[in-house]
Amino acid sequence: KSVSGLSYPGSDANSDYSFKGRSVVTLDDMPLGCIVELLDRASYISGHMRQVAHTCDGRVLATLFYEPSTRTRLSFETAMLRLGGQVIGFASAKEASASKGETVSDTLKTISQYADIATIRHPKEGAALVASQAADIPVINAGDGGHMHPTQTLADLETIRSRRGGFKGLTIGLCGDLTFGRTVHSLISTLCRFGDVNFVLISPEELRTPEYVLERIKASPSCSYLETDDLDQVIGDLDVLYMTRVQKERFFNEDDYLRLRDTYILDLDKLDKAKPDMAVLHPLPRVNEIEAGVDGDPRAAYFEQVRNGMLVRMALESALLGDALPGYEEGKEV
Ligand code: CP
Image (cartoon, rainbow, N blue to C red; front, side, top):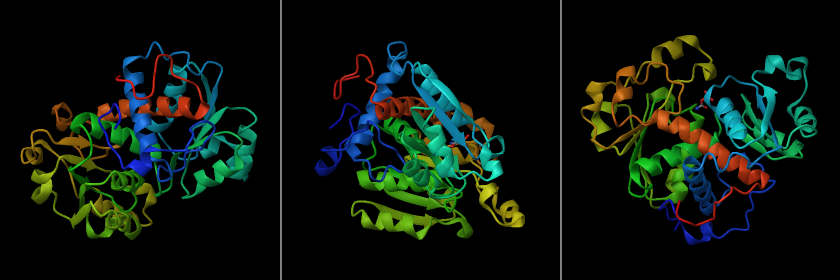
């Protein structure tokens, strides 16, 4: 049991897992106790920003973004700056020697000479793993193609935990592009390990959840799922609604994208049918999936989720560098 009020299976609590010096490509190999520990650290940081302001003095973070980003890159950078460290990096492949043909491995061997920790976003699945294998410093996956986005998952978990008090027994709807949405794949995989979650997978036929993700739900005896294309029919059952953008950049065919992009639009009329305490999450950026009028509804949690993204990245960066948060004691009430 952690100070966050989350519990997890015993074998997942004990751990030889050490954060210091480790790369994080996925959360799948991180014990649940360690995931919860990061959420606890993020909660602590939230209330102690001034105390932690020199935790990473003298450290350098490299942000290697081969794909566009607003939240992930800037929150990783803000996280390091707020911990007292500094930041180098590039925001697109065009700015870097990748445009001249340099491999990810060579880039990471180079960056290892400059920085203490790196984060990488890349359009190809597996690029973060390749980067971590080439680097001499911890590497954090900031999204690899349609595969995984582990730090977004930490932000999502922290938002669900703070809104709903935990994960157990929740009915969580995931809506939109469930084929290419890597945040969905990461989140489902991790929640399945906590267990006792009912997933409602809401998508058009063409954007259904990949089989390998469904297999993870099937392998978790206390979890279940329902697939549907009808948001209106299920919204009243949900404790959490996780909206997603149709991922234009991963479509091969513009016509298909145009046909599918506005399948689901959450507006106040739809919200009328939802529970009064349902939490609406979205990893952002949004296009049309959530009308701006929803932002003022108390159920809208997506900008809180953005802030949590910065806090969990502060927790993760300091943990992987082995830099202790002043005043923080593991397991102590925050
Ligand atoms: N949630 C997320 O990954 O946003 P960005 O693409 O802006 O980083």
